[in-house]
Amino acid sequence: MTSTIPFIDINIRLNLNELSMLKNGRKYIIPCQSYLNRQSRNDLAKKEYERISNIAKECIGKHQMSISDERAKQAFPELEKMIQELNTKPLSRKLYRRARREYHIVRRLQKLIHTQSDIIIRRIDKGEGFYLGRKTTMDLKTQEYMNKTEAYQIITTDQCPLMNILRSVENLLDYLLKNKAITQDRRKKLLPDINKLELAYLYTLPKIHKAGIPIRPIISGLYAPVRCISKFLNDLLAPIYLQVARETTFTNGIDVIQRLEQYAAKGYLKSTTKLFTADVENLYTMVPREGGITALIEFLNKYTKNGKIGPFTIDMILKMARLILDTNYFVYNDKYYHQKRGGAMGSAFTQVFANI
Image 1 (cartoon, rainbow, N blue to C red):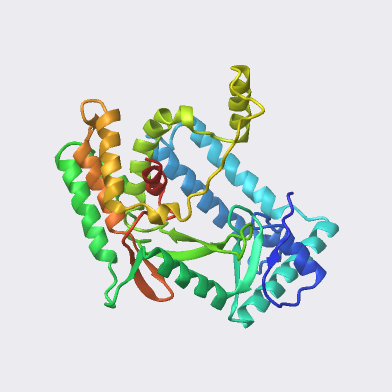
Image 2: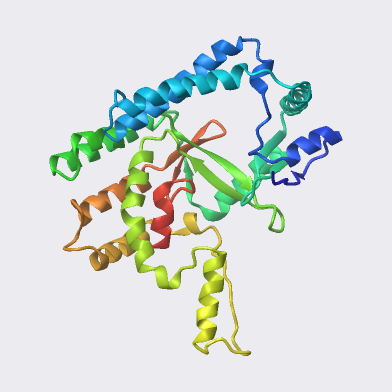
């Protein structure tokens, strides 16, 4: 277990147990909490089996496999048996005491945060640790960021743009279907789940590794109308970009070392060689919309075969790109906003768009 010291930017009293719990980081899972639930463990096991088996069956169906397959017939009873055993197996006294102790620690932390409305808890940017600070401070930094970048426009009407975006998505998918770029099955997969549909929302991550603790805005659109199209377009373009940019792109630290070794082996690395690093501030929000589209057109003209990627023409790809960029609406502090420049941090397509 990797521990991460929490960054506390507020005057708050925490005991050693509470600090230790926060130090575990956001991926830590408190053990055996089902044993403290008022429901019977048999009922919990049944619910857990239903949840996991439904996910598995949906996945099997997506891959055009049958749940009546002989392997599936064997797997599901085994899964049910395993979940039943895990949920009903007696706990050792030591583990039970630990589960109760950690349960109460978390409950105290939750109560402490909920009773003080100005406390905010976030994960830190580029890390797994927690940040505790004041909501008013984060709101102020968010507003300063919006004013500085001039990338966001508040919507003055109270009308939620969600249904208009959904209609735009449906119209685009109908166009692609009509022109035989996608199948009816693909259209269904690119449509959002109507039962879970919601407008994206903005939250911020504190950059504790930088002076003044600036924020990184994230627009979370897990159930937003264009999410599936954004991921689809990213999956379509990213492999081409990565292939084109391979010679000038480092994938990780090991790749950097290997490239430097190759550079040195060729005799290029000398005592006078200077290495530079640069950071583009607010990259995703500072990309000019039309300038980015122009760059995308040039990229597609240069690296597509006969102006197509599979069944998708350049015009179709541009329609998808414009839809994603033009419908970037979100909620923040009970107000509607529209991002009028760049792409949303949190949208799958934004990264490849900014890279291109």
